[in-house]
Image 1 (cartoon, rainbow, N blue to C red):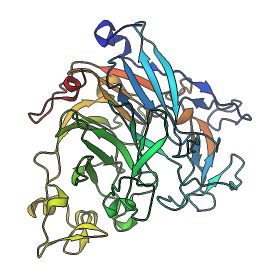
Image 2 (cartoon, helix red, strand yellow):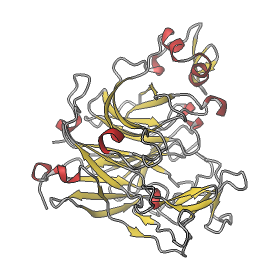
Image 3 (tube, helix red, strand yellow):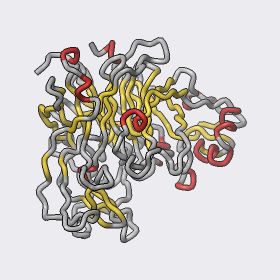
Image 4 (spheres, helix red, strand yellow):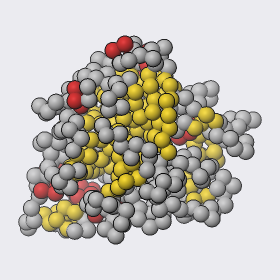
Length: 447
C-alpha cells in the first residue's frame, strides 16, 4: 500500500472506481424494470458523504444512510418500505490503492449513548418525519420507529478521531466517538435532553421537508466551526413556501456556541434542485454540490455541478436587527413584514430581498460533472478535496434499486439495462480549489 497520495496515480480514478459491496441476502425480489430478472440489493451504500482522513492523505471515510428502503405511499401515510429494518447506519474507512482500486479497511456501526446499535427507522418524537415504516410485504412494522434512528447524510471526520454526522430526520447533527457511540447532538428541539452540551439549532430548522434535511456537513480547517447545508427549501412555515430556490446554511461555533445563518440560491430548474455535499476550503470558502434528480441516459442536460461559495460578503441572518421591516421571531427566525424568508422570496423574488439588504452567498462554478465526465448517476452526494487541484466525488447508489409507481426496480445507468448503479468514486484533476477569501485552504491545513 502506498504511503501518500503523491505515490498514487490519481488518473487511475478519473473514469470512476466502484467501492466494494456485498449483496443483501433476502428473498428474491422481481425486477420491475427487466422481466425475468431479480434485483440485486447492494450493501454497500457508502455514498451519502465522504470525508478525508484527517492525517492519512490516501484514506477517506464514507457514510451510509438509513439502509435499503423505498417509497410505499399506497396508504397516503408517507410510507417507506425498509427491506432490512434492523439495518444500522455506518461509517466505512477506505483506502486508495496504487493499482487503481479501493479497499475497505473497516466499518464503524453508529450506536446510541448506551452503546447499542441504532437503526435507520424514523424518530418517534424529536425529529419525527411522519413516515410510516413497512416491511417488504407491505405490512406496518410493529417496531417502526427509533428515537435514535438516523437517515445519515453529512459526515465530518475530526482530528481527535471523533465524527459529526448530520441527517434528514431532525435534522440532527450527532457527535460520535471513535467507536461510533453517540456523545452529543445538536437539533432544534428545546426539550430533547440528548443535547448534552446544550447546542440548539435555530427553531426554523424543525421545518425541514421530509427526506430533504441537512444533506451536507463540514468543518472549518481550525476545527472550531461546523457548517451544514439544507438540501432544499424548507416548509417554513408550511409546505406552501417550499418550492423556491432559497436554501439555508447554518454555522455553529463549537467553542462559543454562536450560530450564524446564510442563504444559498439554487439554480432554476424544472424541479427544485438539491444541495447534496459540502466541504470547507477555508474559514469562509466552501464547495457545494448541487444537482437535479435525472440520469444522463434519460437527459443529456442533467444538472450535476460543484460550486465554490464564499460567506464573507453574505448576510448573516442572525445579525440582522429588528426594525420596521425585520423581526427576529423566536419560532420563525428572521421575518420580513411578518413573512418568513421562504414566503417573501416566493411572493416577491430574490431581487426584492437584495433591495432590503439581504444577500446570499456568492457562488462560482468549479466543475459541471455531466460536461466533464458524462456523469451517469442521478445523485452526487460526497466531495473530498484531495489537494489544490484534485477533487473526488461519490454518488449515492440507493443500494442498487429504486421504485417506480410502487414497483421495485433495479437501478440501471444505461438504456440497455446492463449497468447497475454502484457507489463510484471519481477523481477530477486540473481544478482551481483555492479559497475565494484569503484564509488558508483545508488541504494545506490537513497536512
